Length: 395
Image 1: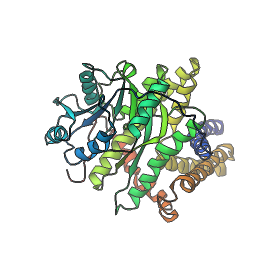
Image 2 (image 1 turned 90 degrees about the horizontal axis):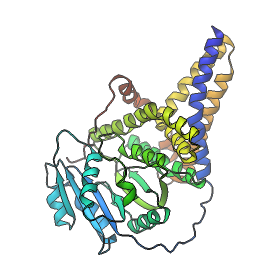
Image 3 (image 1 turned 45 degrees about the vertical axis):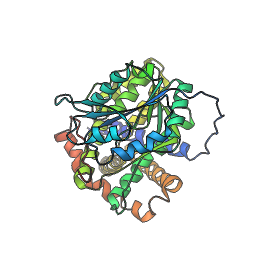
Image 4 (image 1 turned 60 degrees about the vertical axis):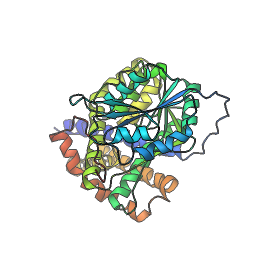
């Protein structure tokens, strides 16, 4: 009996230790000085900026205004008004964008909108396609930098995509902004320090036309960007992180919008972990595909709140078993993982987020994690499987 308990606890402790170790390594690497890149004289390719939009009348003009000044005469700005019931298409046209409208009540989701847009672009294909969500602001010079890096590397390129807490946001949204920064800035920066690829993040993604036309975009996957990055890595095109190009968006202020957004992202991420990780690990090892292995290890790191809860739970159970049965190894492994997580969070805050949130807000993180328990129970009981647009604050 004790041997079975020891084996099971050791397995669980190891499984939770791995993502903590990956996170710890990524944060440590991210804290190292950035390596300077030699300037490359790469010509500016012809670009199409593709903007999928579903009922985005409130913000579409602001998004297009951040893109249009960065385009050259040879470039295109295409908005896909996807199943819209508002004035998104009309407002986009008045802002100078090329607009196509898609209506399909059965096939819903960003992936279908992207596929529709790409098929329209095929009539006069660009050299590089850059995808920008309709609720984003594109930083100055980002389009030019993404286009040139994509042409130079012949790989998908991901900009730094950050979510901001709106003015007056509560502690929960501030913690969410910090967790997003760890996920989209710190961790990919750490992997990039070793020349390893990053996950695609949904906005600020650049693809060569030949590469994008070769993949299947038409799906309603909850995290279509995550799936797309893995698909590219499988075919030898691992995404490249480009933090000098920046795209920003804002968390919804409404509880309904924030909740639906978080549920879609986290249920989708956990679903990919369960469905894809075993196959990805086997494929990466058997094919000796180091970039795919790196992306798979990165994918293993769950949302910070879930990782905190899992580590605390495993550590408590392991120490209880140590007291009852004298089994100490799993307890020390779980405790070591918990210490690594704590150090990683403190380093990420001190190096990358000190100006973002005060340390007092960071102390709220355990309570933030506890408040997300219903979300994770929902994944076990009634998982979200269909794409749902996050509700905006005024829509």
